[in-house]
Amino acid sequence: MIADKIRAAFDETSQRRTRPRRLIAERLIELAASGADFTVDDLWQELRQEEPRLGRATVYRSVEMLVNMNLLDRIEFADGTHHYRVCGGSHHHHLTCTRCHRVVEVDACLPADQFSAIARKTDFSIEGHSLTLFGRCSECREH
Image 1: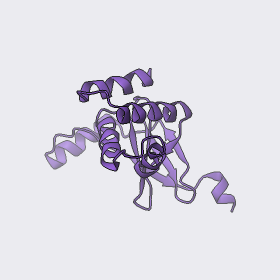
Image 2 (image 1 turned 120 degrees about the vertical axis):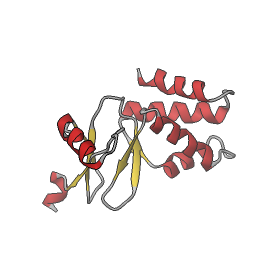
Image 3 (image 1 turned 90 degrees about the vertical axis):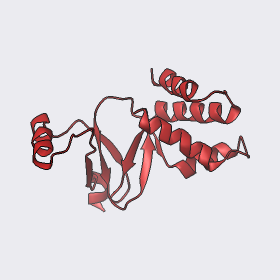
Image 4 (image 1 turned 120 degrees about the horizontal axis):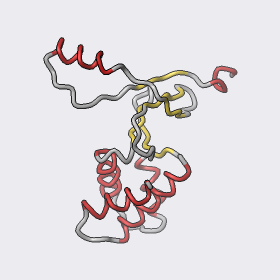
């Protein structure tokens, strides 16, 4: 369950169970349940209403920790901005609307032999990848 994984991630990386860390974890669990995406600033502003002294850096570090642990996905948009989303860990990529920023998870990737060919051609050892897809959703195409 993603809620347990998020709580465990905070326990593994934090010596103390502080109120700000608990608030961040619980809000991320709520966002995971709703499937909503967010920015660090949105999350920070929302949490500051409950914990006025909460620093932006604390929220940013927490989000980055969860991205590095593959519990949060960073979703890139065509305009260079990005949001975050709790996706749950299975391998997938995102398709984003260039107009309304709607996000759809897609189960598409390059075949493994293409990664092998790229590695041989470039003399790199590929450790990971991200595939970013952009387009216009059906609603935005109608306008």
